[in-house]
Image (cartoon, rainbow, N blue to C red; front, top):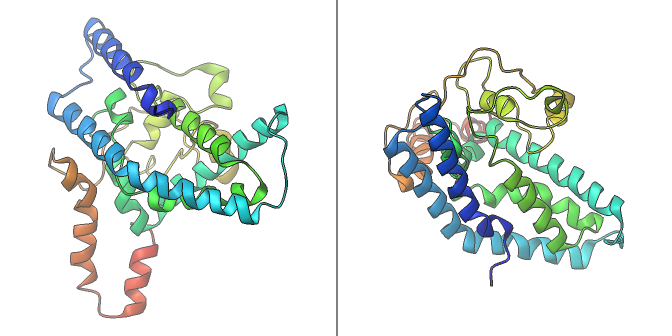
Length: 268
């Protein structure tokens, strides 16, 4: 039996997508394009299929580190253990997400999530098949600190689940809640390709990380969604490899090895 909270939540995802469709119809908002929504779901399916291997590999590495390098024996039956685990897992997500925007090689995986030019709940399901390879590495210090593998896996899944509902235009600003937490308004900024919105609001659950590390941007005018070089394809496989195909072509035009390495690790 698969106890992954994300997999168990799939029926709820589709129920909420249905609710959003109905609400958009009654509010006369055009939030969905059918081929775009299908492409988003296609990327989600390919991500889950690839994740069968890659996520198991990541969890295996985490477990090895926990078994052989854990510095502390932390009591998982205390409230502060779970609070600290949440804060550190959310912080590691922030840095993994931020670096997926600031390192060209990593952006090639994460770009999938930003390719849609719409903003609705199906976009939350539009995930990369490849980025778990490096994003998981940002969480490995938690194993060395002594946070048990399945406790971390559960917390990581809950942080991911939280982000589903923020992919909507139907919820406006939320007052005091926005001071601390990531919200639809904050995350709409993150999906904008307008110059002032690019590479802002990388938070998972807590927006305080962006405010603390200088990547916060308030939503002002409505964002223009998508990426600066549109994908122009509904193909989920091409969505995952298009940026790397471009990188390969551009790398061949760079003569010096030093400059090639810079091209891989600098901002896209």
